Image 1 (cartoon, rainbow, N blue to C red):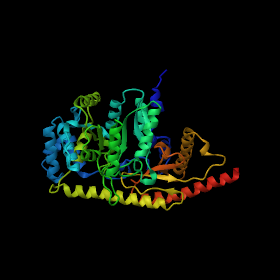
Image 2: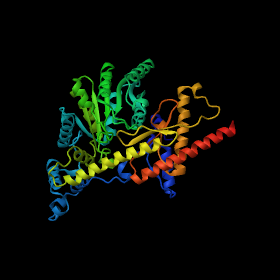
Image 3: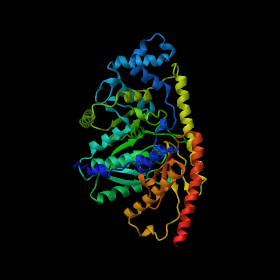
Image 4: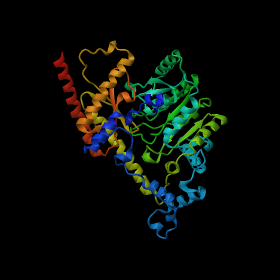
Length: 478
């Protein structure tokens, strides 16, 4: 008989969980489903950037470069880029690369970080990865040394971290984000969380921070980041800075600040920092190409060598994804023939996302019983849901575990009913974690604008019907 790893059986990944499986069944039966469960831009009609796809086209089929009419099909700078890449990486896209990635692309990433932050970056400490997820999992794999080790993880969080910690045998140490203060981090909550973990015999080795936030859409201030770095230094923690949404910032007066930049400004050289970026988000939306990088700072050479060894066990990141990463960090420049189209497409995607974030946030806030902070960044809204109490249920008398399980049953039932009645697929807040006694769901604002209008209207009408049904049932059973 075949027996599975118990850790795999216990791992949960809500954004592709049972509700999504039901959505796929409905779609196969002919129902239209609006998938708002995952940040998958091109599946929701965001068009790929022309520059990136032209570059990949030439590199996947280099014979095109020698055609006489190539100038009529591809801008000159794209052709020149393809020739340059093939000159520096003559094996093309079908051969393995160095384990850490193609050297000139690692240098391009370092140059990008230096331009972005005004701080030095070392290409030797850049690893090209299959999306940011593999970079995050590499850090968890390397730093979890015993069954007592754990990582501090934000609540609400992206379930990659909780699922991966379960798979690797690490402890998840929850720290709550402050919903009333725009989902910023609190030094008091961090201290309370780490003290409670240590009291249970857990050894905290790192802290995960997602900025801009998933699922919250919040953007951290430089002061908040500095507080986190100081906390990590005092508590001897490594930092995983998940910064894949750094291009997705929309709110006026708000800007992305990297952990690397803030750390450099503090003169901090002791806190290990592992920064993640990806081609899946931003304005590229190239989820399927699985491109990304991991930058290591304040990490000794012998530790770096172990990370490269870990990369070598998987041979290397996929090569088209490495090329996509190069296109992300070294896009066309003003004066290049491809630049006008590139800039128009980039700006159009970001402007559209900013408009839809406001459209969704303001629309849902007009629905009695639904509330959300209008997303400052990323691609999601974490919507708070108010439901009438159930007869005979006193949450105040429940244990924390029972209260969490009760909330999970309620928000899963809500999201399933929403799917069945409207075709809108969202993720229950319990899949990300939430403050005890609260209910949420996460939705993207990636669908086309006309679908966002429909989404808000259907959500509002559904919520009103759902609450009325619950209230009528409560009266009937009282």
